[in-house]
Length: 104
Image 1 (tube, rainbow, N blue to C red):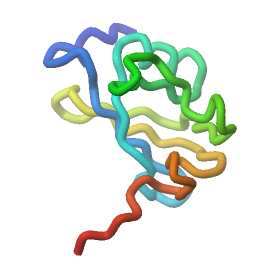
Image 2: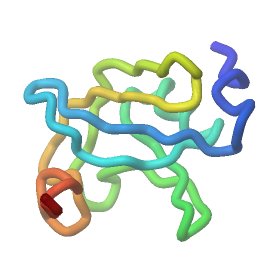
Image 3: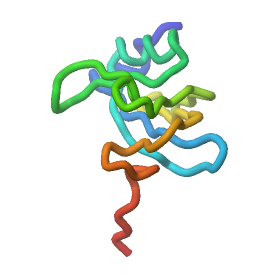
Image 4: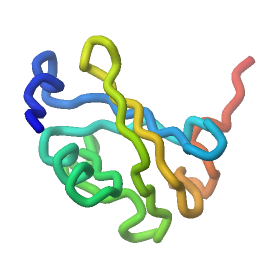
């Protein structure tokens, strides 16, 4: 698969992670070419950490893995929606989803 069309606008592409069984949005992270390729090859999510400037495999240290079910690109090929089977919490705070702070 040619990944270049996803990186025409920027070196990183946002990836929205959604739990397949519930439809709940779990997190947003960023992928570069290498992390997207590793995700496709391994069947588990890999991201680019903007703060640490390194690849990371979600759940590699915590055991809270994300097994990829589907990957969709949006109409402009500049955002991904990845449905996963989540093991444990998706958020580093221990919350199941990173979106738990209701504003309104």
